[in-house]
Image (cartoon, rainbow, N blue to C red; front, side, top):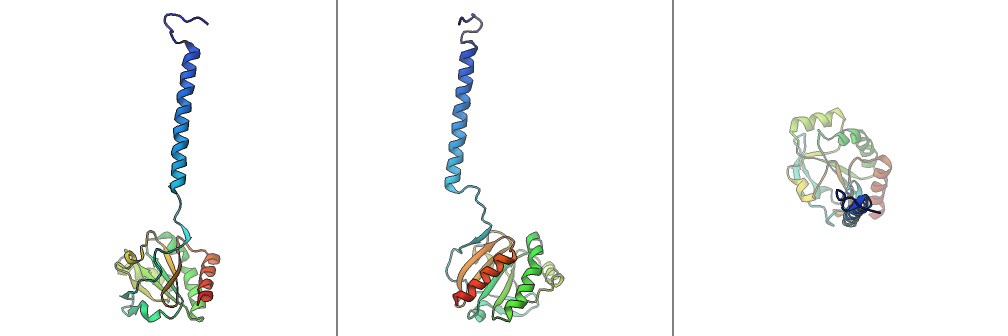
Length: 188
């Protein structure tokens, strides 16, 4: 193959260089993806998981109705501790389920407590009334920081003695919710 003075490398050489550059770029992209997957980049924190602590941090707070609430007073019972806000769309969708299961599990000796996060009192109270929530709901202040809450909604399932059984980040579905509540009964 002869090359013209205007084309010293030739078309074949240019094609080889271009393919080589594409190959190197593809190898770099694949290596970056591999490192990202290995390090868990992009993993969803949603769903069932373990808490970063064994004992639920005790707290006292005022309920939306102005009553005093102390988590320690409920330490002898299985607890469902629910962090939520009125502006949280998944909280809106799951509120009826939580209220329905509260009525069922209260009779079995469970305590449900909602911890309102980063919300104003009027909006939180309106949300609770709109959904007919009858379990204790506290204005959470900084309680969410003690629990390391990273997203709303986030729930903790707590055995008697304030021993944390697990947590759930995201919207609860009835099957998973019941399974985690039942695990508390088995762990007592």
